[in-house]
Each structure stands twice: as C-alpha cells, then as structure tokens.
Image 1 (spheres, rainbow, N blue to C red):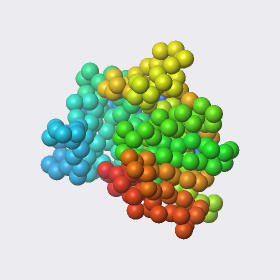
Image 2: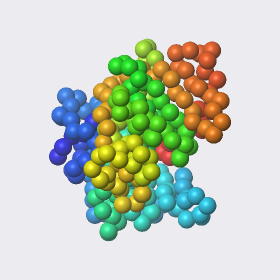
Image 3: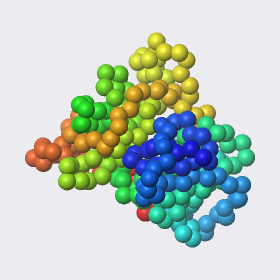
Length: 262
C-alpha cells in the first residue's frame, strides 16, 4: 500500500490517491495516518454533534457524532468515515455507487482537514503561495471570494502551498505552514482564463463543477508572513510577525476550518 504526504504528515492508503504527492515510508510512526475502506455499515447515532446543510436548504449533507473510540463523519448518500480519537486511522464505508474520484475528494478536502485538528495542526479556510523560498503569503475568505483563483494565478510564477486548507503550527520560528497537495480547484471560468492553453482539465470530482489544475507545490514547512482576508470591501490583514499591524485577528476567526470533531 502506498504512502502519501499531506501537510507535514504521512498517509498510508490501501487505495491509490491521485491528488496527493507520493512519499517514501516514514522512519517513524509518529506522524502517520492510516486510511482503509470497509463494506461494514455503521449504525446511525442517537445524537449528532454537528449537522451541516446545503445553502438555502434543510437537507443535511454532512453529520458528525461521537462514537466508541472516536468520531463518525457521515457524508449523506455517499460515505461514512470513522476517525479514531487520536487522528491516526480513518476507516471509510462508501455507499454503493460512490465512485473512486468522489471518495478521494471527500477524504482529501473534507475529512483530512478535520483529522489535522486532531493531530495538532490548526487549519484555515485559505489558499497560499510561497512568496519567497522560505516565506508564505495566504488568502482567506468565504467560498467564492477568489482565494484559489488568486493563489493559482500567483503560483504560475512561484509555487503553491495550499488550496482551501492552510495547515499551521506554532514554533519558535513563528507560524509555520505545512504544504498540502500540488493542485488547485478552480471554477470553470477562472480555470479557462488562467490555464486555457493547457489540455482539457478534469473535474475535481463528479460531485462538483470545479476543475482541478496541477501546479508546482513547495516543500515545507515555511513561515507564514502575511495572511490577507478577501472581502468585498478590504479592511483586514493579519501579520504574524508585525503585532501592531495585526488588526485582522478578530476577522480571522470567521475563516478558520471549523472542527467538527474535537
């Protein structure tokens, strides 16, 4: 079974994961996550901790609950994911008809950001690029604000660090960013405007209209120097290394990747 790298951790998977960069087997198990699938069905809990609904609908798309030894994340009509309390193992029970591409996109973009919280990596709803060889600039914002488009545009002359999930830890050197995977998900208009000279781009998964664009990605960790909050009327900037300029701390809270499991 192959190994993959993600945000400074190593994922061992029984299934190939095209989105993530491959890795050699780590020398230690300290930073590893194991992903497996099962045909076993998980019972519905009596109570859900979190229920996420589609915009302007009452229909749930994701629910989360505590179960023995960890958490159950149910992506309704697609798959159940059981994560152990330490964030070291993810067991998935896909629904019949859930294709491989959809399963991978759910794991990489929805489930693993939650696992990062359990592993001590705070994550922001942000895209980022390596502005210099050792410093990162990030862009936070709500869905549709243009985070991925801006980062992908800049990454053509630099290198991508993250798309949508910016994983960070604190150290004596400052706020460290751990690079994710070497691609960005863009709406069709943005992808065609920026990368129209490339061969036909593939859908990120069958459940989304966004296209996936392969981009060079940095190795890390790198120091976060600036985090810009993209809004209709710009007014906030968070500067980790300039405390007196960090007026955006309060606004930053609304752009964290909310932990469903803690």
